[in-house]
Length: 278
Image (cartoon, rainbow, N blue to C red; front, side):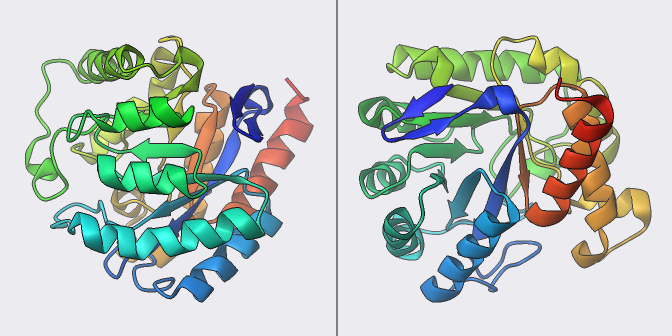
């Protein structure tokens, strides 16, 4: 159990479901759909009804090739929604950011988790902001910034290289004062990886679970699923996404980050019913 102010995350009930809310015009799947704060709040309400345990709000696309936005633009996109959502909904709110200034503002107005896709490699100061607020953090592996990460997919040894990165990121967070039990790691599906590499990560998720931290994974509608299915459109990747979630669940991960909360929750409940609570 992770206590985050008045909120709690019970990771023994894994996997928890993190619902995605993109406040961006250029995200690969739903870019532009929830730019308006009222539309975003409606999306959050829908995700919670569908069974989301965590709401992850982001104001900067991290799709391959994206250029990023200024701190001011990112703040303008996410802060009004986080403020309103923290008042309207009793749920854990995560901010998807790599910027310390955005993390600080978001944690000050209702977020209790930071989802840092850089694993603190872009702005290590994010860890200090998380520590100061007693928040949790998801540390994700990436090979580089989104602009060029798909040009940097060479590894000495894929799984050990990613594991070393994540352990170093966790050490950085702990040295900044983040409690060990507030740290979650994510091997970074799609962030500087080829399709074969993404599949290898999923096949070997147990190795990340053995590192001593809860593991989050985000496969939802990503291009490697499209490549497997021959589906160039993200809208055609739902079944593949749910399948990847269930495989990840059976391998012991603690959090799944998804666009399609209802379908994911239904699949998880079905598998739990078949296999039993444990």
